[in-house]
Length: 497
Image 1 (cartoon, one colour):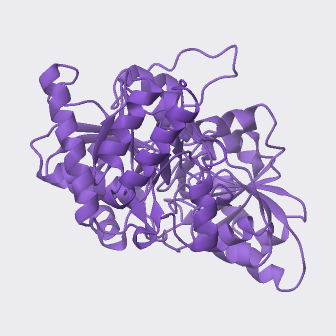
Image 2 (cartoon, rainbow, N blue to C red):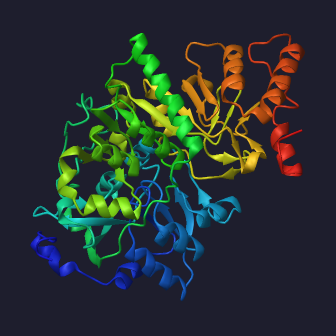
């Protein structure tokens, strides 16, 4: 432990997970490290689950993004979580949110730190943070994610460290912890290329706030990535063709621009499409590095990648963490307020690829709510990137549930990204470049190129009647019909007429 706890006075702070869990009171706001099932608190949450078998208590949980099963599945099922923020991805807690048993605050991931900094989220009674080591200064070396840990460490009243020995000490040096100052007094973030390091390799904090250290050897839960299929491969091919045309026109060079890919199987599969392309010497500036990024590094396609989290399948994780020296000089992990910061996204000119649940004929995107009312996962960082990127691209299959659902609808049932933030829509059917177009021009492209053949005539009929009924209005809609596709799905189990 001397290699991992290098601040000598903290070596006497090692306690059991049960003791640490006993400190957390009913009604507490608890911050937890972790971002998309990586670098998350594990052993203390499991002790809280055991404690819940003997006494009833509830806490509010604020994290970086989704966590592994110890929290979002087991703690939620045990009835411990009263309120959860700002992102989740587990079916157990999702069901509790959608039945009103857990409150959920969905938020742009870049803005979470400001909520803590201004006291809107807080006071944070306890922060439970996973670490690979504690430095000689008493600072925390995170594991496989940074997320909101740095800002929460500054503002938490008490800190419990989960010192996780399953992570290699070689992770030290991978992180770049830069924390902006207060709004109104901060300086510009001095990043002009993705390899630049701005801060320290450990999270600074007052060691006096560390109440206890719990030893853990529980590994990160593997990602739930589904392997690419024929349709996601087709989406990738449409996107690659589009990028090639951008190069011919002169808007991009053959090195493209830094790439961002959202969380999930479709976005990962689209990024995977670069494997067999002519593109090389690529850069990735994203929030999460999934399997596809490491496949591209191995293939010599990606030369450097920056994010706030590394979330991998077991097979890919074994390959990467078993040979970390092969990757370490090509990676950096930052706080999510930096990885997702609009200032940096716009300065670097990112190509941003995120996943939509549904899009409408004018280019509005729903990323979060099934049929407008049921939360799926959350907004995540998609809004941070889409609004500020050089190219805000959304990808989705044109249909779902075996064809019962069209992913292209007259009007989205919930708006996460307005038409003003959406540059390009891609499905397996084709691509619609919406830049510089009026609403009626966008509708023509989306219906023609992105909708599934089973729904194309139905969409065109709606649009034609909307134009006629509104007198060719700026954005033609038949309001009494605009959401009828969703009501039909609820009653008939299909959007088809």
